[in-house]
Length: 83
Image (cartoon, rainbow, N blue to C red; front, top):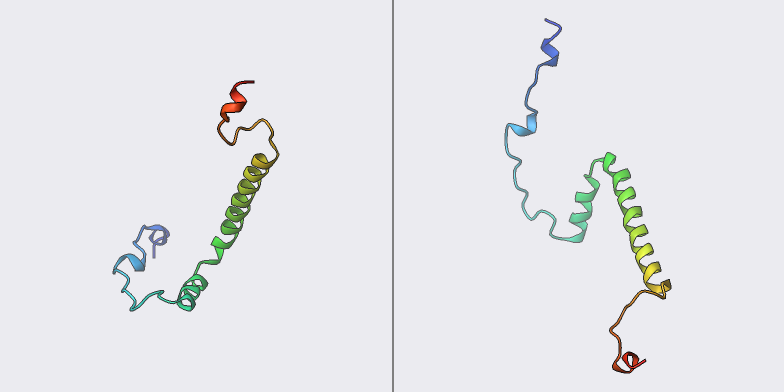
């Protein structure tokens, strides 16, 4: 056996054949939850970071809309234009 024989590039096994279609895949909530359990564990930290980032974005947007008094949220009324 040569030392470079281990390093040669080979296609992985799933690429040889198409994955078979499952009958009624993920039709009910319980079946969808089972699909989530098949998720690779290395995606969990990515999901947590994404949730924190989306939550921070929503919080900062709502905070800006509710506290900024110079922000114009509606049209000027005709009686305000006279002043």
